[in-house]
Length: 177
Image (tube, rainbow, N blue to C red; front, side, top):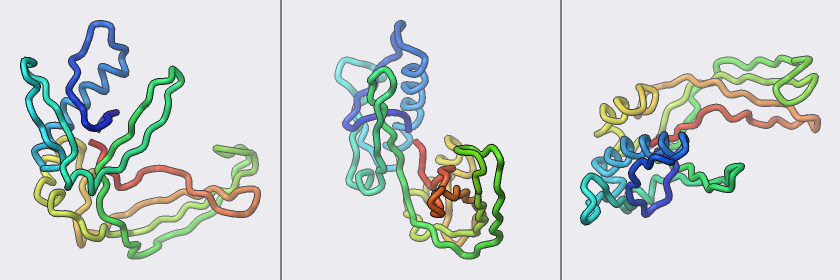
């Protein structure tokens, strides 16, 4: 949804904003109104500031919010907020392959294990089902996972020097607002 900490009040783009701030404000201006319309956020006009709004989480939004943050190199706090829904249920493991690379992603002689699965999302909430067209329009067709539909996914694991497997992060079922 962009880097945002709730409660949040729209900030206009300023002439001296860095490119990242311009991009983030633009992303928020598209995502926050949609999530307010869906019912995950409240949206109130800011007095005396036409076109600016104040947003906060609703109870529903609090239930589905996934939030973390990190510090940028310049010391700015970057918030990573998403609305996450539905645990997945693995229906079938379709393939497992192992390959060792002389020059791997993280080390030399690295063994990568690829696992291909088919899965379904369990307990897709009504707010996703009822707003799937709006969500797909903003985030693309793969942003919505519906109940009783099987989806493929590929997971990558790296075998550590200790012999244990470590998941290589790719994508998760996060609704990136």
